[in-house]
Length: 208
Image 1 (cartoon, rainbow, N blue to C red):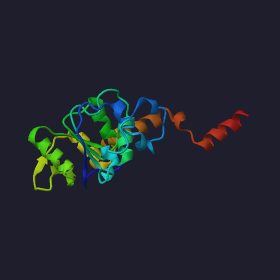
Image 2 (image 1 turned 30 degrees about the vertical axis):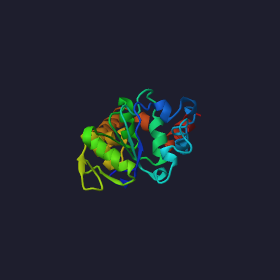
Image 3 (image 1 turned 90 degrees about the vertical axis):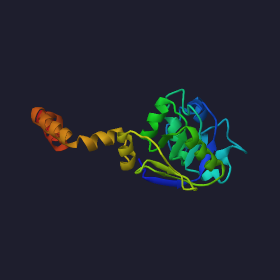
Image 4 (image 1 turned 60 degrees about the vertical axis):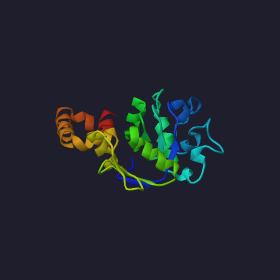
């Protein structure tokens, strides 16, 4: 998973509420197992002339700005995969579907919740085609007019994105010593579980 530290990009304004995961990634594509290339199916029913992510310069945007309850509905992780394949690294919304929000962190996408006048300022900047800077180190969104907007993020999510680690990677990073000690005890208690191929071959020959 790619690390996320800071990002400066145009932000594509998709200012709709309750965009669910079936809109983001329609159910009929769920049999596709390869993440690469999924982006072409994102918002399939909405794509075409006039759709913001198909309209220059927003077709190169790495930030998506949207409304309330983005990613609500089905828990399908492909909804995040398809956005990531489009090149979206950050989604700024007034609120998120809970599972979609969690899935973002597993796939290197930063979801940011903003409301009120701060969100209005971000929406205006997106519609004006002016770039935003998202800095995960300082937990801020910077606008071209100099306004700096802080955002909240759980510390473990922040650390995971900064390090480019998924859940398994975080467990390995935080508990490497405990895991190593457990593996050593296991090897001592059940050595037959760690037979090398040479030892297996030797046992097979002895049995023959």
